[in-house]
Picture 1 (tube, rainbow, N blue to C red):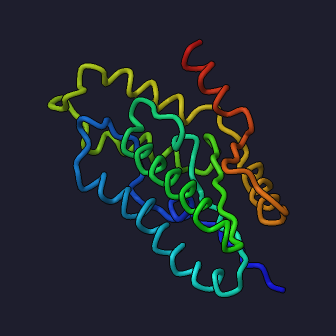
Picture 2: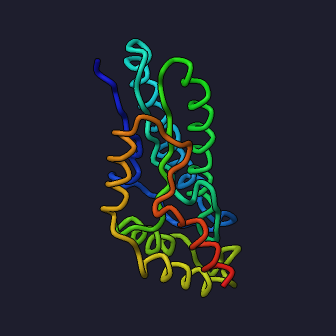
Length: 191
């Protein structure tokens, strides 16, 4: 018997305008682009693949979320909004599809050395300026950009967790990589 496995997360592999944005200032076309890629693109691919999985009565969907799907922070509002939407989609589908023999799980990586965070940190300044609502706190935004491009983790850790999820008999709803990433970030922000 063939069991289908699908890992969905186009924003991790393709270059799309996923960048930090101060939610009060971000141009709406950038927010729409984020939702098109992260949410609507993921849903469209999932719906197509599910046809085969439902026909076979088995399969696994692994949705590439992020720690930003469960925590929102400064300059990550729009990106976090899309990842929160993926969290809702994944959790709903997990409940809906389990009776059909299909497992749905989410992977929630933290900041990894993929170049993704570098593009995020650099691109905000393409549209953010002196006339922005958040202009008075621009130094803080720059500090956050430096933080997210600083010490980051080896992406091999995420790849290993994906392999484990593909091969697992059962999965949990969320899979944080590293497992303590939420506590690490909370401590760093409060610390």
